[in-house]
Image: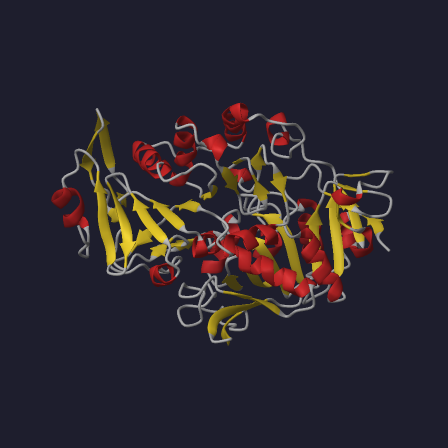
Length: 503
C-alpha cells in the first residue's frame, strides 16, 4: 500500500548498493525534488552510496548544480548506464576523469532491456548495435578506462543469426515524475511531455522486490480515467507531492492540453525557443543542406529528424507543402506533431499520439520509419559514421543507433568541414569562401555509431548531404552523386578528401 511522504522520508527507503532507474528523458520530466533530497541525505550521512543509476535517455536538467549532479559529484554513485549524457554537464566531465564507471548503450536497447525485466526476463535481444562501438568485438559500451564490465552487452547466436544481448543490473528503486496521484495511488501523466518507460520501470522494480517512489504535482480525490492511469497504485510505495514548476503557456503547448493547428506549429516553436534560449541551426550551410535533404521526403512518410543541422529540414518541408503530409516522430514516444529541441528535446507540439517509449523503439527497430535525417561528426572511407563521440568529448549515442539501424532511407546531414567554414550563395551559385580547419570526412572514424557494412547488408539507401555535394553509400565506399552549382569538383571536393570516391 502506498504512503504519502515527504521527499526526505521517501529517499530514506533507498539503501546502499541500490540500482536506481529513472524515467526522465535528456533534460525533461526529471524528479528534481527526489534527487535533491537524496543529495541532502548523502551530505548528512554519506548514505546511500555505491549506487548504480540506469536511465534510457539521461537525467540532467542542463545545470551542473541541480538534480543528480551533486550526489554523483560527491561520490554516491559507482556506476551509470545511460543512453545520453548531454543534459548532465558535471557528470560528463567526471566520466572522463574516471571518477566512476560509465556505460553508453543505445537508448532503445536500454528501454527494451527494462521491459524485459518487467516481464521476468534477464535481458533483451536486438540486432541494433551490431558492428558499431557497443559491439563487444569493437569497443564495448564502456566510456572510460575503468568501465570494463562485459555483462551488459554480449554477442549471441540464435537460429544461426547474430544478435546483441542487452542485460541490465537488477533494478531495485524507481524514481518517477508524474502529474497527479488519485486516492488509490494511481499515477497519471496528463500534463507531462511524455510517460516514457514509467510503467515498465515500476513493473521491473516490483518484480525485483524493490521500491517505487513517484513525485507528483498534486493529489486528486477522484480516480483518473482508467486509460489515463499509466501506473496503477498497487505498484507504488511512496508518493511525494512537490510544488509544481511554473510553466509558461508555451510549455503547456507541449503537453497536449489544448489543440494546436498545423498552421500554428511554427509560432509556438518560436515561443518555446525564446523561453529556453534555444537556437535552431540557421547558418547558410545548414539552410543549403536542409533544402536539399528535404527533397528526399515523400507524402505519407513516417519520419525522424535529428537535432542540429537536420532541424532545418522541417522549414523546407513546410515551404514545399509536405510538412502536414508526413508523420514526424520523436524517441520519447510522440507521433504526429512537431518535435521541440534544445532543453525540451523529447517533447512535441501538436502530437496526435504519445505512447510508451519502448513501443516507439519497436517501430524504429523493425524498420517502421520510411526515412530519417541525422547529423554526423565524421564519415570515413567505408561510409561509417561517428555521431556520438568528438575529440575529448561525448554526448552518447541516444536513439541514433536504433533510428538508423533499419530505416530504408538514411540521410546524414553535415558540413564538409567545420571550424572556420565560410560559404556564400548568390543566384543559386554556391561559393566556398573559406574551408574549415576540421575535416568531417576522414580515413577512419574515431568511433562507429553507424555501420556501413550493416547498412549494405540491410539494403538501406544512405545519403550524405553537405553544403557542396551529395554522396551515397555503395559496396565500394562513397560515390559522388551530386555537385551543386558553383562548386569545383576537384578543388572543393576531391582534393579535400583523404580517400578516393567514385564520381
